[in-house]
Amino acid sequence: MQVRVDTPGGAYPIHIAAGRLDELAHSIPDDATAVALVTNDTVSALYGTRARAALAASGKPVHVIELPDGEGHKTWETLNRIFDALLVAQLDRKAVLVALGGGVVGDVCGFAAACYMRGVRFVQAPTTLLAQVDSSVGGKTAINHPLGKNMIGAFYQPLAVEIDTDVLATLPPREVSAGLAEVIKYGMIADAPFFDWCEAHAQALRALDPEAVRHAIRRSCEIKARVVSRDERDVGLRAILNFGHTFGHAIESGLGYGQWLHGEAVGCGMVMAAELSVRACGLDAAVVERIRSLVAAIGCPVRAPDLGVDRWLDLMRVDKKVEGRVIRYVLLPALGRADVQGVDDDLVRPLLASGRLIEGR
Ligand code: NAD
Ligand code: GLY
Image (tube, rainbow, N blue to C red; front, side, top):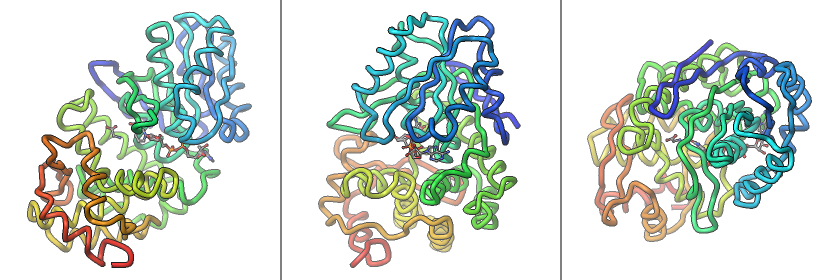
């Protein structure tokens, strides 16, 4: 199964199949001089040997670069560790980096590829559901800065995205639910029939039914590919991919990163953004109830922590979409359609104090 991405910065295939990990050599171009397999200790223990053997079938020397696991390592130090390893191994501009792991490994490895010798080719081999349906596609690469998440980075497209659906079998259930939040997001913002399908297959998806998971990944990648092909640099349409993220980011930073997984916060944030859509752009209230039920069905929280109304607004004002202190939200005028709109704080305040959305209110 293949989906194409076509952006000004590069056109490439997304291959989706069980066992694709063993085919990684196909993504290494003939003129590559060497391969650097960039992964983390958790993923390496599970799939490092297989991935290395698969890449060795390309006939190129394979160097493994193992990073420490965790969002806390998405830093300059980790990036430098990759550069050190590439330089010590004397890899040249025709080397190819392969990112084997979740979104953290993909984002750091992609940024390393964008910088090393002013740019070398790289392949995304995402191993979390979130990375397979979102972060590996579209060329956003980054590390965190102490003052902000993903603040230092580049748009840099991979040569290919290689998705092995089998590797999801070892993913903790919470990570599966977090990835499913991004899957159902695509139905909400761009494809109402896909939302209906997700409703009908929520339990199959949570249980990682192979056919359901392949369909969900393919449809998610198709929608993301379409959006980033029209707006690679995130100057307009691409913002719709951030549905639920304004509220979600506030939950993540308000509680401290790592308390809730990103996808969990986005799941809850989508319920909040849907409620706001009723007030700000006339979304049918019945759709909000469907969204709330589906977010709960995939195993994500539907009520947010009580951060205090003013603090919520302060946290949401750090969002990249803010213009002149007005918070701009991705809203749904209808299921399957999304718009970005500035909303007055007075319309948002009641939601942030509502017992339906906020725990303990
Ligand atoms: P992650 O990379 O931290 O992975 C989650 C955990 O799962 C880690 O402990 C990881 O080692 C482990 N893991 C990975 N694959 C596994 C497997 N098959 N079996 C068992 N364990 C496995 O988190 P994530 O949710 O994949 O990605 C989150 C990151 O992605 C964040 O840094 C976020 O900023 C970034 N992101 C980037 C984009 C983008 O467009 N570039 C989009 C969304 C998110
Ligand atoms: N995950 C949002 C984007 O790729 O733009």
